[in-house]
Image 1 (tube, one colour):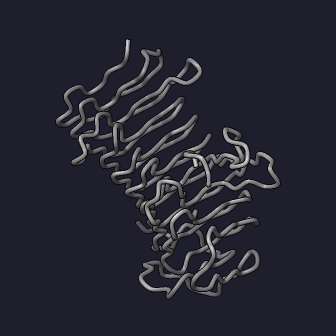
Image 2 (cartoon, one colour):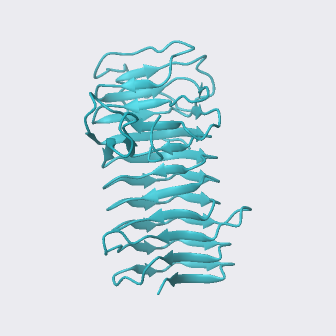
Length: 284
């Protein structure tokens, strides 16, 4: 188990490995013309694969069917940098248990590992604790970080009904063209993360949480039917907490954008607010 940090455009033209679970039905992606030249070994994962599936080498990994995980089982652990996980229009679905994650960084030999340039794209994640988490903890040493995604990308995903976090973003991450619906928190943005052209619906208390130096632009936020209080909750970390929030639409929140402290340097402009009791506010 991991800690809490723990649709479609083809995201790569080369296939470094193939994941197969069941029949390859329903994937909307048409392969490019011409022969495919893998950059590494082709991995065929048969129906009934044992989860979690662990990625230990750089490359492009393409899903060839839906995966339904049993209770307590994570789906994909990443233990390498320069990895693309192309869900290929398919779905990773959890048995709701509040403890499993769809995609997360893995532990190697009990040591903290940083994985860079990990991309997850083009599919659906449903019912996990976290759809994507950029940080996991060592189960043998609670509170100790085991793995971290840096400069990760999440593109063209649908993520819904995850109990804790839809998509968590690590340092320097990019989130683009995703739909996040009724997750505990739809998005958690970290330092220097960029979030653009996404649709966010619902959330337990806030639809998005930001820490510091994040950019949010071109997104549509809706309070949905769950009575979500905040569209964006900006939390001050380390006394800075500066964020840029621009060219977004907010509908149906008690407060569209709320900052936990009145830090100088917050930029909130050219946004549109519908049916929000308070558009922008900050704690004193």
